[in-house]
Image 1 (cartoon, rainbow, N blue to C red):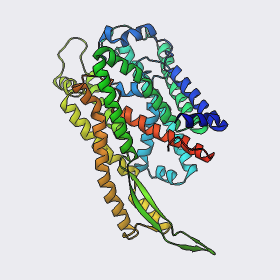
Image 2: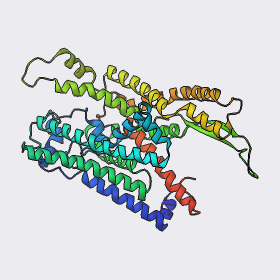
Image 3: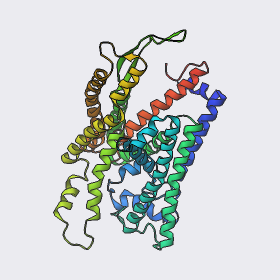
Image 4: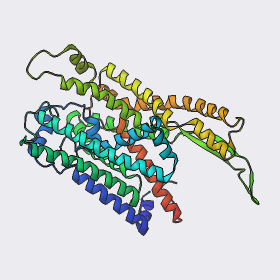
Length: 438
């Protein structure tokens, strides 16, 4: 492995791409520690200190994870990559309900370029909305409910607008940096920035476990992390290969076709999207309850108290059950809108392909739907179990909410890591070198 990495850096073109990617990642991480204008960084550090304010609420944990801790530091990159992720998911879902979007997707590179442009516009709009919401939460004190220090001392409209514009511009800059990595670096830029944000939180999370729980719990967490990573890699690489045979055809004087291939249907076709959907949906009741909690000392409404007791604590059985059920539902939902058996069947039929033993056309689509529906079940259960690992660890190991190995973080780390290594491996093999993977 080390010799393969050395060969990669000795190859001029590949070395330039790797160094460019590392440079963009460095800029991205530096931006996470530059406070937005008008923010009192000393007060932010005090509000983030658990010894001063106690453990903070977890309803912003997902956004803080994807921003590499920049959200709660109210830095210029506080919104992180979440607006772009949300915009990408929305544009992808709109293909189902807006025929024009589906037509653009089927037009090839030109149509997908327009969809990418729509995604950029929507990202800026969502960034503006998220920035306004974040500034409102900071000004009202609801971002740090256990801390009474003013995060933005100057409450004037000029300062507020300046902070909102800065946070929105930070979102646009992150989107541009990610696209630069995709174009001139190695791997998918947006995925690598998310990967960087998650990995950046590992030292702090592990250090907190060592300090608060001791070496015994630390090594138990480390062992669980290694086993979980190995199992996630195994499942992420697993796929059902549906064989496809192409008939021979005469085009002019040439004979084409007659080849055998397969359709790879992964066990986890939905990736990490169902976990993000389920987490976001479960944050909504907690957010609504927080906005409806009286601040004048009056009695808390019953429904608000029920949400606070059952849907804001990750170690509560009701929270776990709803979380698990929502992940399974969103897995089936997302797979259904991203993999169209009828479209695959039509494409196969157009080029003379067929599944051995299955007639072309509707029988092929029905067979693919049959295979898809059954392979999605273990994929959904797998996503639900991996997502519950941090919550179960909170109960069994008594680790804090920042348990690093599990849920969204481990899925993204493994997925992005495998894809990036494959791209580097392919580039090495193109230059007649042995790849990173034997």
